[in-house]
Each structure stands twice: as C-alpha cells, then as structure tokens.
Image (cartoon, rainbow, N blue to C red; front, side):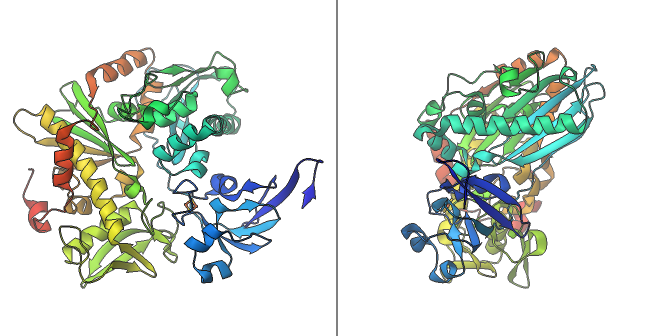
Length: 520
Ligand code: FES
C-alpha cells in the first residue's frame, strides 16, 4: 500500500489479463472503480443479482455476510466476490468478466444545410454512450467515440439511477456523465485536429432521466405518479463550464423530452425514420426498461412509455447479463433440443435479452413452456452449461412483453377508428437490432407480421445528426415533433391495465399460422 499524504492512502487494482493498473484511494467501492472498465452492477449494488462478480487473484478482499448469502462456498474459495460489496483496502489483482456491451452507432450521411465547421451528435444512453464528430459541410461522420455510461455502478436502469439521485448521489451522477461526454468530445477534437472555433454546436439526446441528470435537473418528479416533470424542455448549457477546452461560441443543447419518460432519443428517432411523414400508420418501438412506443400518422402522433422492467436488457433475470462476451444471444431448436450461440464463442456466462426472447420462443415451439408461461416437467429450462431459466425469469419476460404490447394496443385503440393495419414498425436501439423478429412474434410482442418490422439501428444518434445539420430549421423541426406528438400517460389509463393482463400469456396460435397469415 502506498502512502501519498497523511490523510489518504492509495492502493492499486490490477486488471487481469490486461495488467491495466487503476490507482485509487483506499476504501473505494470496487464496483464504482470498475464501471468504466466494463464492470456491471445490474441491481445497483444491492447485493442481490450476482451480476457484479469478479475473481480476486491476489491481495486481500474479505468476505462479507452478504456475500456468504449470495455466493456459493465453492465460488468464495475460488476467489469470487461481489464487487458491489467490496471496498479496496489492499493492492489486488482481479479478473473482471469481459462485459463491454455492443454500442450501436450509425454513419449514414444525413442531408444537411451545408456550413463550415464541425458538430457533435451525442446519444446519452442509460448503458452506453455514443458521440460522433460530424463535418457540417458534407454531413459525413468523421469520428466516433463509444463507451459505457459511468453511472452504471449506481444501477443498470433508469429507476435505479433515480433512486440513487434521490438518496443523495444526484451531483455525482451529473458530474460523472458530463465529464465522460466532455472527455469523449476532447478526444475526438484532438484526434481530428478540430480547433475550438471550428466546433459550432453539440447536440445531446437521451431519455428523460439522462436529460435531467446531465443538465443537473431534479429527478424527484420522475420517481412518483404521474411521472411527469416540469423541466422537460430544450436545455441550452453553459459551454465553457462543461467543456473547459471550448469557448461559449459553441452551442451546447440537450434536446427536449416528449413527456413522462419519453425523451429526446425518441424525438430524434421520430425524425430519423420520418415517422410522421411516412404513409399509413407507423410505429417506432424502443425496447428497454422503459419501453417507448410512438404511433405516427399523417403528420400527427402519440407516444408513451411502458414500464417493461429490465428483462429485455438481461437484468433481474437469474442468469441475465448484457449482450457482451459470454452471453447467450441466440437460441434455436434442433432435433427437439435448444441450441445456443454465445457472444465471443466462449463458455456461456449468462443470457442477454435477445437470447432470452429466443429461448422462450423456441421452448414454446417445442412445448417445453405452456402458453400460460409455466415450464413443463420441472423447475428450470436448461440452456447451456450451467445456465438455465427459472419460472420467475419467464414471468419477467411475460411482464415485459405484456407492458410493451399493451402500450402499443392503447395507442392503436386511441388512434384508429377503423383499420389497425400497421404499415411499418421501426425497432430502435441495440436490442431492436439483434432481437430475432420471428421469436418476438412468437411471444406475442408486436401486432403485425414480420415483413412490416424493420430494425432502425441507433435512430437516436442518426436523428441527432439529422437535426445537427438542419441549420435554423432545426428548431421548427423539433417544435413540430414536440407539438404534434401527444404524450399519453399509461400509468393511470384503465385500458392499459386491461390490455396488460390480456397480454401476459403467450399466444395460443401455432407459430406457423401466425407467421404466415398476413397482416392482422
Ligand atoms: S449483486 Fe452487486 S450489483 Fe447486484
């Protein structure tokens, strides 16, 4: 242990096998230290999910009572610890199971009003961050930085971040995210030799919680019914205090939220897929802890967020994890058994959202799960190695899919007088990009046929880039979307609960019939 002053002693955490060294003050909580290095804290450090497990190879890391409750004696003997329950007081070496999630970017050229200089489009996600440097003259992406949201050590989802903020960590959450984005912008400018005067503007998009935390706004209103906030508008931020290497001529804006938990990532997505101007009734769906659904038709629309829970992100599932090395991400049935594909072709460590949907869909087709959701013949649905789904895991998926499909049903009920024909359903975000559409239909997630569903990639980032290059039309375009897409609060809507209950079972219709019979 190194003593650098009379008050603070420093210790070093060495990551294996890379041998990267992280010096830190003695007493630092291990999961907070490891968050920027891919360490996960799915339950927000409550000590209940096992998702923050690391293996201590050398150095002293005492076992606490909580860890004895959660880890097996064999795991403790092998050096496994829950990072959220450990404070580093000694030099240690640890293996952090690789968990860098896939960050979806997008570099299609958006038509722009040409101007000299550069701009930054930033997607501030709950899990990941993506920042692009754009040449405003050509509309081309010239640089990209991606990373993990450093707030992850305080919870995997927006509700955990709200809880952490309300418990007193709001300032830390704000500084964490501001500093991360600032260093990504600085890296891009350095790498592409862009000077401060050349950077014209920075546009940030994100869900309502990220909007509030980045802008230093209070999140308490989002912690209770009716989950509405008075501070949902566009925020112009003080450039030089957030980005000390820039001067105030660079405009920094976090785009406005649409209402409730529907943020500017959705606003940007609406712009990216031209949801309001496409023919017919179109849907944009972002599957996450808060599933966001938007209906667009003839220049108008409605949006809502549904509390799907974190199952689609692999959290609060007994063996759930992010889509990263070791995650079962695809499951198919072969000769009556389930066959799994694992990211990185390594030993399976858990199952991510797309693997969960696939596994349940395949098990339904094989009759291993009943339409009610009950696992036949036993308590576990074995996938691969020692990875299995429990009855509670399947229930979590049922609740998640019921929340999303009920949200869509409410919007369709409210909007459609006659036909409910959905022209296109755009699936936003990383999960939407990797989910098997056939499996999603099998579990009853969407109200249309496979040919109507299209992954939209990172539509938030693409939309931010589109607005970045829209010249002065940017403001009217944003105002048009905000004023023409009405937010529908679902929490107090009795129709939502009726649909929700109805949607909990899996569809009874044989998959082959459902898949081929044409729209609706
Ligand atoms: S057990 Fe440590 S974050 Fe969940």
